[in-house]
Image 1 (cartoon, rainbow, N blue to C red):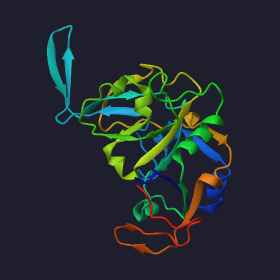
Image 2 (tube, helix red, strand yellow; image 1 turned 90 degrees about the vertical axis):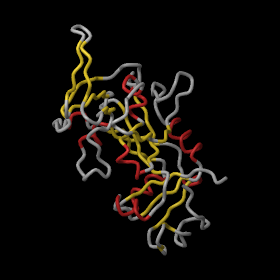
Image 3 (cartoon, rainbow, N blue to C red; image 1 turned 180 degrees about the vertical axis):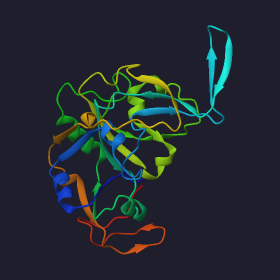
Length: 251
C-alpha cells in the first residue's frame, strides 16, 4: 500500500523554495473566515460548526413546555478563530486543484510523519494541538460534514470545529496543521448562537493573525512538481519535470 502524500500548491515558485527551507506561514482561522476569493481558500464559516436542518431549526422551550420551529435559522458554535492557527495542504494532486488554486508549482510531501514532527518541534513548548488528552497532534485530515445533520458532539469541542468544514469544500481533500498558543482547544471554549441563514458578520481584520514557523529544512522529504508536464483526462500522470524520480501521485 503506497504511503500517504501531501501536496501544497503555490502560485509562485519562490514560495515553494521557502517551504523547502522549512518556512511555513500559519494564519488564524479568522483570516480564512474573512478572506474573499469566491470560496476557494475562503470559508465564512471557518472555525464555526453549523447545524442547519432542512425545514428550519426546532426549538424546545423547557420552561413553557412548548416546541416551535424557526425557519431559515441555524445553530452555530464558533471556536476562538483568532487564537487557532492553521496551515492548509491537500491529500490530492490533480489538474482541478491546480486550476482552482491558480498554482504554478506544487510541493509533494513524501514523508508526512516526519513533516509533522519537524513542524511540531519548531513551535514553542506552550503550543497546544487538537485531539484527546495524551493523543494530541498537529496534523489532521479535515472532516467534511453535512450541515443538516446534528452537530453533536462537535459543537462543544473546539478542536473538532477547527478540523471540520462543510461538505461543500470536500473537493479540497484538505489536510491541515493546527495549533494554538492559548487554551483555545479547551472543552466548551466556544461561542454558541442562533443565526438567520442569510446573516453575514462583518470582517474583523484585527483577528487576522499570522505566525511564521521556521523548522528544519524539508528538502529531503519533499520534491517539487512543476505543472508543465503532460496532462491527460482523468488526472495527472507521471510528471517528467518533477524533482526526483517520477512517481504516480498517491491520493
